[in-house]
Image (cartoon, rainbow, N blue to C red; front, side, top):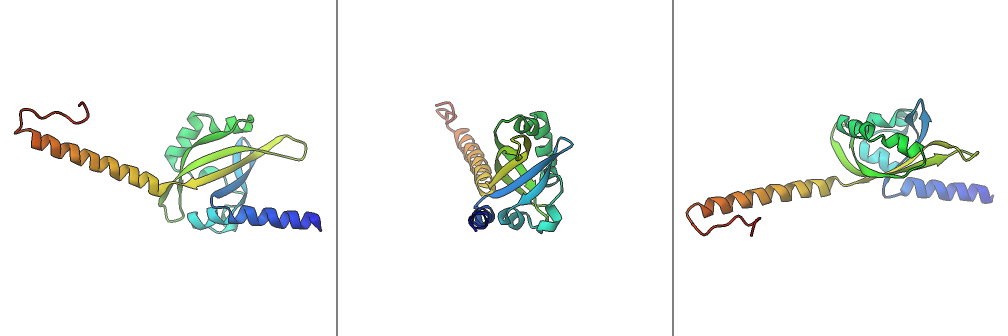
Length: 160
């Protein structure tokens, strides 16, 4: 009875978490999805049957895969390290989601690392806002330069 209650509570916490949560198994030095929560499925637009037993890298952009391999990200986690970084995920519609990733080792019953636990926080809106702010800053700087052409006392605001 207590074990069933504990399992039910774990399942509820896992599925209702406000982040995308993935548990992987290590297969041939690659993370394969063992379990995902509702947020992962909802945000990426897949059904559970479509993602279970697939490589986690299937949902990364090519750029994210290259960065992960260049920094040996998965190997570091399998070595017992924690990993905090950014990854871009591809939705079923091919739209990209920008995420912060926190990854840590998953241990089996004998205490050996068997895979990973990965949490993704969607930061797409923040990334778009940062990009828009940079674009507006560049426009403002250009406007100041145009204004300054007729003013001999004009200085670049970045250097003053």
